[in-house]
Image 1 (tube, rainbow, N blue to C red):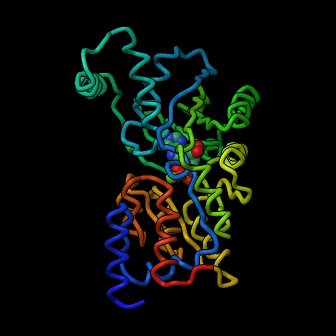
Image 2: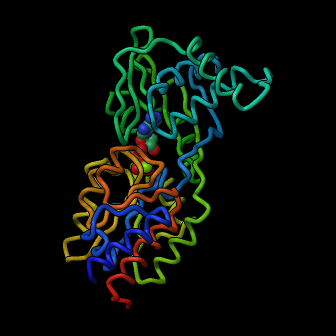
Image 3: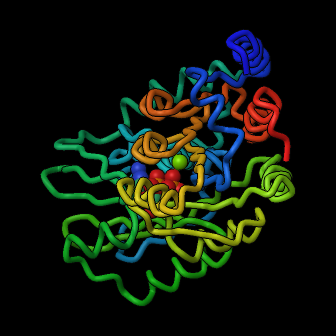
Length: 314
Ligand code: ADP
Ligand code: MG
């Protein structure tokens, strides 16, 4: 293709909300053989909602939610946002706001008064969060986070989790002062176009793969819904880049689509990194493409555009 053709294609892409950072990335996309999708926030909407809660100790549900929401208040993770929303509605149910703006304003005011003070907060990508509240350690996250801290997961908690996971939901565990105090189940629905896009890629001769830090049961349930057979679950951020490299071994061209901080190593390792526009800045920086519309159809648009520009339609 001539430089002019590349320039025209870049402009056409931009008009569709597909931003490409240079001619090389534009050229590589034509030969993509595998598209690896992150699950949370990429295949799914990244807008989780709480579907159930369970407390294991004698703690009051309201107090439990206050603790968990306080611990999650500084997290950017979709699961954290779901927990804060739920805690807000739980505490303020029945106090009707007058408008959408009013909800937003009141939420900020009220949350800031009512959340507990947190010290030594840290987000642990692929695992959860930890911090101190009233001088005691609180952990909110998956099984790995809990067991790594030497805390036992009782049968009651395990069966609550498994039940959620078999239904494509994600459960987080909460430990406070070295004791498991409860669990929260959440659902994050697929994007509307996800199934069609996966089907479309297969028709183009491209293999879709799903990679996620979430647990195996949830991952497999979601993959089944979306029509992806090749699933890699319980993968830490560095592991996502390893998945990219292992598929590259036979010379295959790999596209990675992701939205999170935890996807940035894989976006950088891929031949074609595609960041969801609504995602985090770090992901956008690491990628070759930015899909501004937050719509997965643009993965196909980007590959199509490259194939047409470099006239190698197979
Ligand atoms: P994905 O790879 O699908 O985007 P992540 O790597 O972000 O998923 O998260 C993997 C798992 O780590 C989540 O399913 C959850 O169990 C746990 N986790 C991560 N961040 C948080 C958080 N802020 N609060 C609770 N759990 C979290
Ligand atoms: Mg994600």
